[in-house]
Length: 243
Image (tube, rainbow, N blue to C red):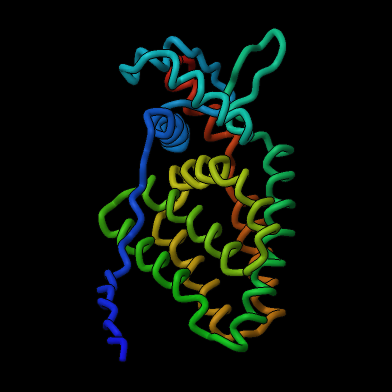
């Protein structure tokens, strides 16, 4: 009779969080976005590769690649005779972004509500992001609020379960971080977080009509109430020493 050998059992490892590899190019991208969101750079400013490289103490190669990425995402625009400049946030440009966001995020909340019928806990990641928003306010971190504002809306699209929707929204992400960052220069951080609290509560309540209406108010009305062009002009005058 042949002996049956017992197979050694494989010890299962606990699930580990994936490592995040941030290249020098990623860091340059983030630095340019943060500088624009916090008013160090201003929308419409000319972006000179050599000056950015010198300011960040890096070679021009990662800056060049970072600018290519940002150009593909609409953060910088390269036009004939004007060179490479940061995105503008004129009323017309802002209105176009708002309309696209409203269409995508309205669809996102509708699909999330459908998913919540089977699993109400599907919005747990949104709850976690709102908690982080409150923490950013407590530590007085305007750029942290702007970054987490973007993350909230990215998560909203991701939780829809619609990958096409998310892929259409994602190229706007860095433009939105800049817009959200500039909003923190005009608006109390507490009010920004309160708006996300309200949106989350409406989602939990499950009333589709109310949620959709609040998304429109959140994206359109709250943004239109701020004067982005005036803010940029005032900052530029102050920086350039103009009256």
